[in-house]
Amino acid sequence: MSRLPEPMKKIRWSLILPFVLVVLGAAAYSLWWVGIADRAEVAILDWQADQASKGINVTWAKLDTGGYPYRIQVDVTDGRIDAPGAPRAWTWEADMLSAQTLAYKLDHVIVDIPGSQRVHYSDPRDGAEERFTLNLTSDVFWASLVDEGETEQRLSADIQGLSLSRARHSESGPILAGGAAATRLQLHGRPSPNVEGTAYDIAFKGQDISWTDLGDTLWSGNHIAQLDAQTRITSLPPGFPDGLATLLPDAAAYGTRVSVSEFALRWGPIEMTGQGEVTLDSLGRPEGRFRTSVGNLDALIAALVEAGIVSEQSAGLAFAGMVALSSLQGEETGRVRLPVAMKEGVLFLGPIAAARLDPLY
Image (cartoon, rainbow, N blue to C red; front, side):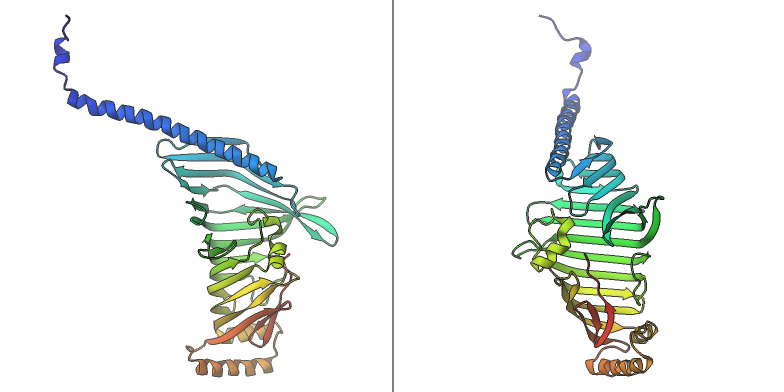
């Protein structure tokens, strides 16, 4: 019988065994990771086919899967979504999109869009369809989706350094037709617990939102320094969110209601906080009522006078009345509690008709 060489007799298997187990474990994990990555690609292709069955075309120039060993990362180059059959056809494009999830926690996906995006759409005007393109860039465009079941879904989005320009298509080429910008936009949403039907709780924060040449400029200006809101949206139309293209008309028909439990707004001379609710009337105009606490009264009255909404004589009476009302209400100096109502296409700030409200669709 042969004997082991003398060097082999001196091997300490207690030292080698952990190394062997690590190698075997790494190989098993690698095979498992490849299987998960393949499943992710199959899920994307299945989603693409499902959207095609609904008349929405999803395409890309290149799709890569990576991220080994800790995560599954899908990089999409020149992604494009077309909805030619929508009531108003639209197209979304992105230069780059990256989606990643931990290999052991597939119910949490993080999406990053580092490049530029474009949205093409049409808008009926004067009996004809005008075509527009929104060109969007940002320093950060990030979203997170957690899906742990039908009632355990959470969506978060964070957009920083947003810049948007709109171009109108013409026979002579694109014509600049307005733009917008924001320092930061944040959105958090989830299905509303213990509510019948389709309902969502949505929180929004906006900082330094401005725009130009995107419609009529209100007397309050085209810069919102702050907009924070905690909302619950109920009575959403059937099919949401599959029917985004017809969401607003359907919302009016089904009585969709936005209940605002708390909001803060600083828009030009307007500085207010409050709560209330809003719906859309049969013509697509906002309709509702809010209980608000309004500050910066002197600047607010001055802006209303400058806009010709109230006369100087009426403004003096209004200001004196608001100051007196504030003292009776126990509000701090310079603030007053006022009802804000939207009815029949008019926005009322207390008794003052402050603005006209156009249909949203």
